[in-house]
Amino acid sequence: MEYNGGAVVAMVGKNCVAIACDKRLGVQAMTISTEFPKTFQATPKTYIGLPGLATDVQTLSEKFRFKVNMYRLKEEREIEPRTLAHLVSSTLYERRFGPWFVEPVIAGLDKENRPFICSTDLIGCINFAKDFVVSGTTSNQLYGMCESLWEPDLEPEDLFETISQSLMNAVDRDCLSGWGAQVTVITPDQVITRTLKSRQD
Amino acid sequence: MFSTYPGQVVVDHPVKVPIEHRFDPYVDNGGTLLSIAGEDFCVVAADTRQSEGYSINSRYVPKSVKLSDKTVISMGGCYADCLTLTKKIQQSMEWYHHAHGKTMSTAAVAQMLSIMLYQKRFFPFYSWCILGGLDEEGKGAVYTYDPVGSYERESCRCAGSASSLIQPFLDNQIYFKNQVSQKKTLTLDQVLRITKDSFTSATERDIYTGDYLELFVITSKGVEVQKMDLKKD
Image (tube, rainbow over all chains, first blue to last red; front, top):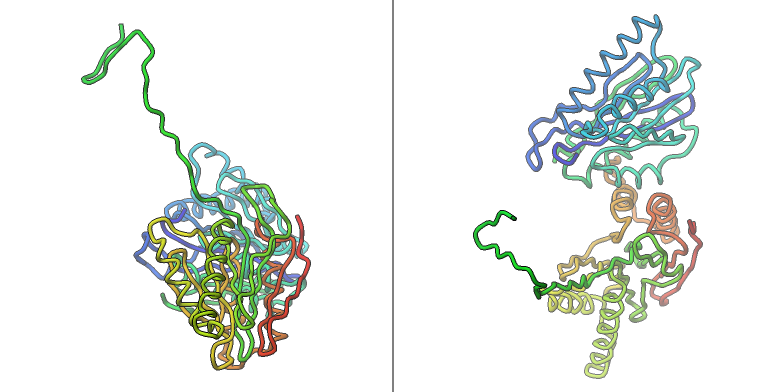
């Protein structure tokens, strides 16, 4: 889990959610790419963040893209975030004794535009949180930042600032994460993804 | 019978073999400490929970000790080592006072502590020390140490089990990192609020931090102690 490095955080705001990740890809101490974001769009209003072993990040993002597309073809509607969470959980538990080395984070709005976030461990145990979820090599630092900075019912602009500050200051204390950040804010009307320039070390 | 490999001897009677008895000399008693230096004050804060594994030894064992009117030391890690190290420092300070007729300055204590820690380089004190106080000019000073004596003067630092949780928050609030630069100095009230917020956040997410928070505020008037409740779960 600490081979490639990475950090993902998601937070709940007032009728909105935000998910953010760093952009570093490394091989232990050596950074080999600074364009490796770890959040992927599952549906127009749901994003999934996948920090951990990079090969598993790529494989699982493609597996989930396939499963979400099949769900859409069969059900003729988009998958709800809560259902996606259970889909991720069972996909991970299928490999209980030879797990995928990722600890996913899911953030989205359900069909009534209610915010939803959750995270799972590498074998699929879901943590349904009401405030924020963190994952990756920087999880301790992110816990400290989010616990101090988060407050309930933040508007989208304030939520963006809060999640950005939490991620940027946390990854500055972790050598395996950083090199830029990508923040996505999901509201009922629009989804805005912003790239942040942070310390490039 | 059994298949043997070269060097193996098969016997039909009990054999005396030396058994290795191991003793692990270190215990982690957990806890978190932090210190912030201001313009003319210094705040040293530590929680008071002492744990061993998943058990709590005590809810109130102070981690900080007042060394003089200008200096407070706080230590986390193995409590036994911290206790002995504190005694050594206090005794050395008393010898100094008898020899020189004055109290040791914060910078002098800082260097002495570094030397004391390095003297046990090959069987270290398992203690994470933070020394807080006022320097000779009356400005706040924080000296941080690793277990073998490497030290540096800083504006703020946290150590202990929740240090990885609190340090980025301090970077953001004290050094204004990743924020539009605001070179303003912080007042004592602001620093106390940041300290209390840090500990309440750390208590939520770290199992070794909690119970009570003891704050030592060092100003030119002396050392004032405040005690605050933290979550006890």
